[in-house]
Length: 246
Image 1 (cartoon, rainbow, N blue to C red):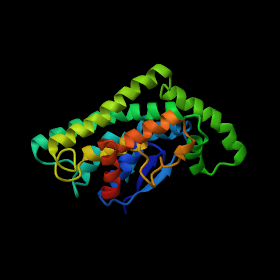
Image 2 (image 1 turned 30 degrees about the vertical axis):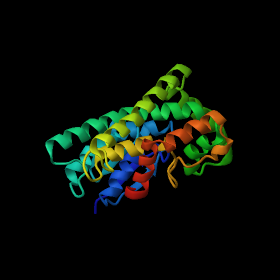
Image 3 (image 1 turned 90 degrees about the horizontal axis):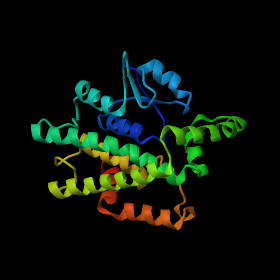
Image 4 (image 1 turned 60 degrees about the horizontal axis):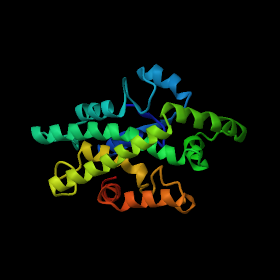
């Protein structure tokens, strides 16, 4: 029997990208949540990387959501997410790479707005059921680690906001060109999963790890920004992909 484990952070949109693909293909797997910070000991031992997700598929281990994506396409071709048509295939690969880069900016911009909110540390640390004193000790360390790791600095956050806008516009351009519900073909592809999962924290689809805020408690400016993102065509598209395909 194949033992398949996805090492992850529950709140990570890159881990969500891999979860969605595994679920789409109907593959049985377990998730193993690694504690942020100390996770590096396990991730380096497993795949010689410092990031998650990492997929252990029986005797094979693959790290990085993009490498996992193409590994799954190669070894589990059922319900394919990369079209055989050469032009469509090239377009899917191109968009997956583009949104993989945009995901970095989604994370930085959003953390730049809400990192100091208690809900963020709860989402990061509560899955591990830590004793209260241990969690309280880890909160400032984890928050500062996130700030440094993802370069949550004013100028970088402003730049990332611009890149996030570009990512949303890219979805809208692709939909306009295709004239359908999906970015490339007439069905779900890896491009759709990458775009929807990596943009999802901006619109907080119900039931996802990012659906954690009472937005009425956010600043009026941030409330408006999130509302505008959710109501524009790209935001509505992400929500529809979660309703229909997730």
